[in-house]
Length: 366
Image (tube, rainbow, N blue to C red; front, top):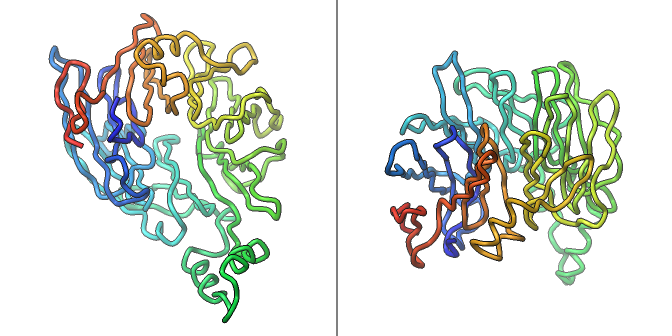
């Protein structure tokens, strides 16, 4: 464990290589800095290399492009920089007008092309190297961040007005927060889902939109909190989860139904499947969906608790590559073999200032 460092995101490059993004604990959120660490266990001695990037790492995914000769990972930052890592080299691309639309939330690959979604309903599609275009007609907010800041500037407290009354007045002042998108996934360029939240006079409600290759259409769904994770199963079933434990299953043809357990109030943030189990990373530990039932995951959690009892309610992100399941917590990283049921603790703190891997090799100074 490392109580002085936070892991932000990561992904498996293959069964033996992992990319991780982290920041020193206490750093302000969205600071333009992240540490990228590559862990490679292909040889007898694990190889660890670290790089610094100018951006807050929001999401990292494995990415292969035969046409570009690329086989590595991409890291999306909140400010719209996209870093491409391959064999020790990092290149960066900029989504040109990303800063005009709030921060970027998620990146995915669909049919060899990259898509990004973000906090004001924006969706970008990468159509070539350094070529990102809007793919959000009908979704994106009518006001960009400059417009919103101007609205705030034009509605400053009146002379003598109590500041608390002015703040409360924003409940009646339409800043057009509108749609926020937190996840995007698809199986083809004409079969794409996004999810997020829409501001209403009662707060925020969960929303799902579907793209059929021509237009975005809002799906009718049960009432939920903000939705922030999408998983598409091999049979085409779509699982979408979010705040307060909500988990929906369905598709654009049959609609969506709630399959979550009402007693669970955690935030569902990540999903990965192996055989007949969908593993769900939440802010209250590891859950699973099996036999049409959502429940706490027991087997892996038992091994995690042996190492540290706090792991039972750690906020996990999960990702799978073949039979390996990557578990990233706020200050710890584990790799679980789904066939041998072996759990490896990859990174922990040997002292307050240094992170090492499980074999004692220094990862980096915090």
